[in-house]
Length: 331
Length: 292
Image (cartoon, rainbow over all chains, first blue to last red; front, side, top):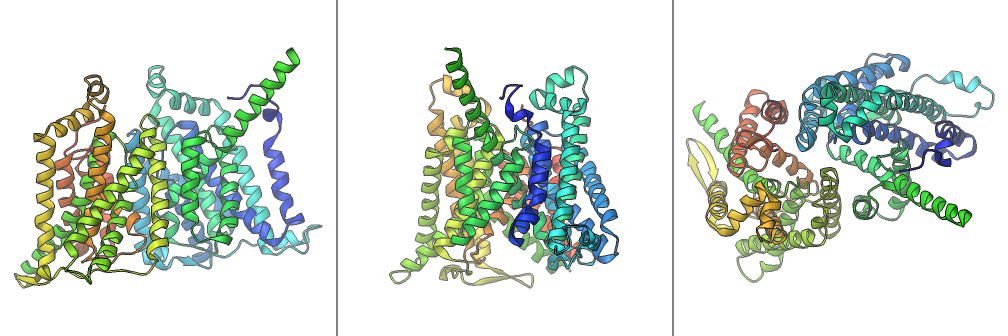
């Protein structure tokens, strides 16, 4: 763990990341913006999972269900009913959160491996419905051609003139994702968030001091599901369509790998994990089609050599450096 | 109506016995080692590919299906041995999240390795000539091979059950499931026992994969598909309960088979729903015991 006065902690990361991310379309290429959108969405998805995994200590193997529900709600509303994005996005968060409330009600009654299995079962139920319910979800054909939100007003802003819809949607994504991060940081830093950490550290003891463990876990499950729904809604638009693959169980494993790769003990860990995986994927798929093989090997190295993830490893290295420097100064 | 229902029943029974072969290994490993092995489906897939390969190599020489099945299962058992000895054993003390992710890493690696070696086209193996025929049962045809599977499933169940209850090693396995530390303190070699369990489990997965080749084509992706089915089976019966896995397979097979009659397009849904209901009502499954 890091010391309280560590320099790393004093940097206003949210602002730094917002400025860095928002400047990409101004200085980078169209392709950079494309990758940026993917990273931003995956990062939101991974951070929402980490609210369960890192903060509350719940291993959900079905988090992709809420991502998928958000994507379908937003896609169906925007494509089939012509609802504007400004309404469809909150609706997808509510839809995903609502399903998380129903499923989570049952899941939080179980612990450990059984919790993981039930979340997996529910996500597969969602998958089966999305895959088969042709009338609403398009079944195995999916829901192609989800429209972009109307962002023409952006091009009238100074400096935004030559942006196409891809860049405009990216900026919108960055704003939505950063606002979600701010909200989640608030949640984690609140007394409610501290309770979640207490539950992670020792659920029995939390129950002894009068905390309703299940209710807190359920609340965390709903919040995480809602933010996953926002990520899904953005991804459906970015991907130009929503498909049943979004909800198939290996996707849950993928986002879990992102989260752990970055480091579950740090708020920004999953963001680093998402960026690393997206960029690595883009590099590696240029050389070989065997990306899953590479991912599997990365995962093995991570599990055996760096269980704290990238951010955990960097923070530990930084602390060691500081301690070394400190000793020299003292001597 | 009756022949139709009987046909569905037989179809369900075949599915059930296949799933039982796969799920029993999964359940044994979970029961003793508390590791939920996502890679069990990958072992099954590798078993199928190895069987195809062995049939391919051996065919010019002699009628080769049965030796190929045995070779494939043994090959997968050897793979399981290497994985347990080199990697998995270092993770026993860790949180289950890391164990889950470790087995998922194996899914990724083995899936791509199979793709690299055998490509992405569908492969198939023809039925052994001895079992190529079929029987007419109440108007529907039952392939002899399916009947064979319906016999092999329970036979293996009985063999494994006898091994678990009658042999010294089996007693130690059951003791390890109850209290690993105590068994170690009594002088038993728990590490070797775990390796043995994992090898037996891999063998069963490889056997199931090899035996499925005459009735299902071998394709990439069969690993992630089957593992979820196997999870459902062990969850219904009770994670770690041997007979629970047997009855869980039976229930799964029949629900899937009759579910198709009742809601044609939602029969996959019905088995997932069954899994969720069991987890909600009796998380330890129909035949399992609650874990401390």
